[in-house]
Amino acid sequence: MATQLTKNFTLEEMSHSNTAKARNMKNEPNIEQTDNLFRLCNRLLQPLREAYGEAFIISSGYRSPEVNKAVGGVPTSQHMKGQAADVSVKDPRKLLAALLRSGLDFDQAILYQDGRNNFLHMSYNSGHNRKQVLYSKGTKP
Ligand SMILES: [Zn+2]
Image (cartoon, rainbow, N blue to C red; front, side):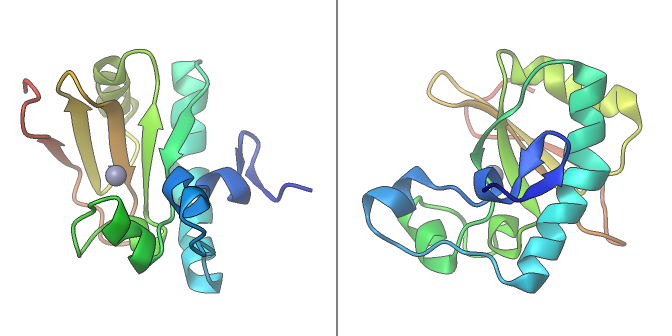
């Protein structure tokens, strides 16, 4: 049975990794990381999803250090703390605009829309949210 973190997000989808599955790597968040995933969903992803009105596909949430390395994540990635998720929707640029309009608190939003990638990375760091917007290499600001 799935563990529901909020109405639309489960712990399983927040810690699923195709790479981990394919390479038989463990990718299980501990209590602290699960707590961060809950906050990320409860304070950011769920209210944003409701404002946006389209299903979010989580292409990456929690990553163990091993999985993060395997997918080429930066060594300081907030994915390893359970503080970040990559969200796929039809138009992630529109989702970024909705995020900024919403007034919701977030740490970083990074738009990946470079012809190869098409998602919005969002993080939430309780008490340290910077509301920083960045664009990946090759993505038009
Ligand atoms: Zn990410």
